[in-house]
Each structure stands twice: as structure tokens, then as C-alpha cells.
Figure 1: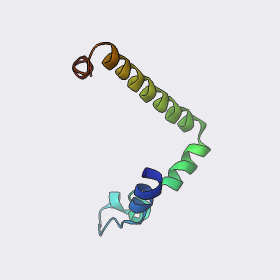
Figure 2: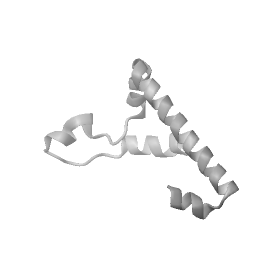
Figure 3: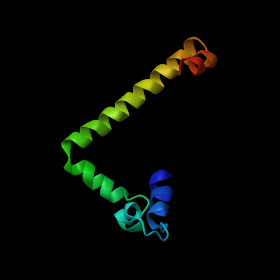
Figure 4: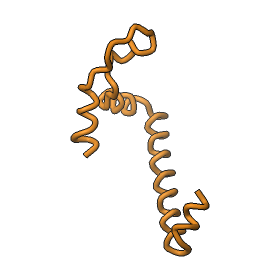
Length: 80
């Protein structure tokens, strides 16, 4: 859903009018997934950090499920 609906939708939604310097960056585009993929593909360090982030989130979710299964969801909520 994110790849098919949300990312193309936010790519074509105009940012609006703004004369500030910070909003002129990116030509009024909210999210440019193609540019992000190009940046990740051209930077080994960025690719490593994205993969490390995915792995850390996977471990967080795995251990959260483990705590919920062995103790309870209340313990998981209190531990976060």
C-alpha cells in the first residue's frame, strides 16, 4: 500500500506557495522516493545505516513479541 498508493500520492501533492528559503528546497515535493533510492544506492555508508536500522527494528519487534508471549502485553507496555 505504501509503495503503490502513498508514495506516488505524496510525490504529486504540491507543497504550496512559500517564499522562505527552507521550502524552496526540493522544488515543492513532499517526498521523492526515487531520489531516496538513488541516494541509498550511491552511498555505501547510507545503505549500511538503513540496513542496520531495519535489523534493529526487527530485533525490537522480535523481542517485544517474545516478552508478550512469555509474560504479558502489560509487561511489554511497561518496558517500552
